[in-house]
Length: 430
Image 1 (cartoon, rainbow, N blue to C red):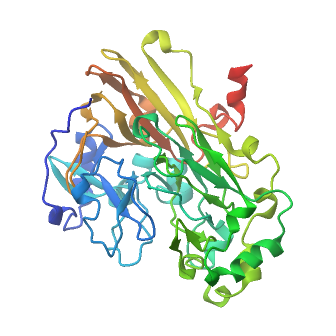
Image 2: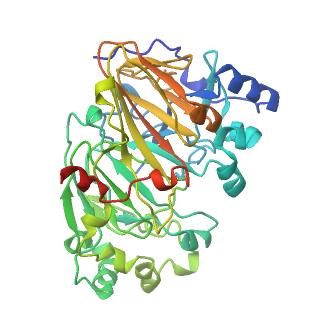
């Protein structure tokens, strides 16, 4: 079992930096880390969900932000995106950089100051920010059937759309919790009138929208790619979720596990004039995508090795790949290194990294997978790697007695032709 991290533990009240960092300070910290930034854990609650309690957060701290905010069921990685939670402070969801045992500034501040030096010139010139992030989400039961708006729809409320992806890390899924199945899309033959009727029945209790959907059993070590405007009700496995840097959504299920879902969560990111317009709400959905009779073939992922390196004591695998509407928006790899092995990994762009098993080093930075974390505690399991450091190569070393396993996610347009397509895993089975 991995030892608990030995990193310092500040008081929860000191969880946020108190002053804006200077450009010189940001450059100094980036240089000291050889192009890598240590990040503090970023915890996010959801008032409408039940925490699954597998994120290694201490049981006494699951409701550290108060019962009125909800339990903490998410940890965000490499995030410059604020959480769209009612009553949240403005920096909720933002990752903080740690230097010499203290939170010093947000990753967002660092990228605003250093731009292309951190995220690469292609991403910086096009987006002027780090436009993606990832998270673990962990719930006791299923999430309501919902969708994320497209860019065009989200722009009507000053937001961006949100495609996303899922990978179910085996190390965190030792327990499936209440419902390890996810409903995706709508059964072929479903009509818009059927879904409009479900919305009209919102206040009658369960609007039975999942009667028109299909649930897929979730398997640790696999994943899914989910474009905007596709209905989905994620199940109760701990999920690693690379996604676009937005927090828009619309809940289409009125009740889940006996808990009512307020109408406000359906129209949270809809212009006010459409809040009661059932036709508009139904038309938000990508109808062809939702009733796709080969939905699994179009979205299901299994890991694909980057190269045949097992004999060298390590394996790097694609776990999130494929394009959304013909665009490479995000991707992720899982690196497993055997005890005593040292390897240099080169990537085509910046990435956020989290360890899920073992201990070791990357460059000068210690990696230690914690066994349990108190709210406000600093850990040694999360790093953001700049474009320059990633492309030059980062040396990983497993200094422990078990495999060192890390997950790292990338931004848009990084891999080009090297990125596998959805369905390419089948080539390994032939």
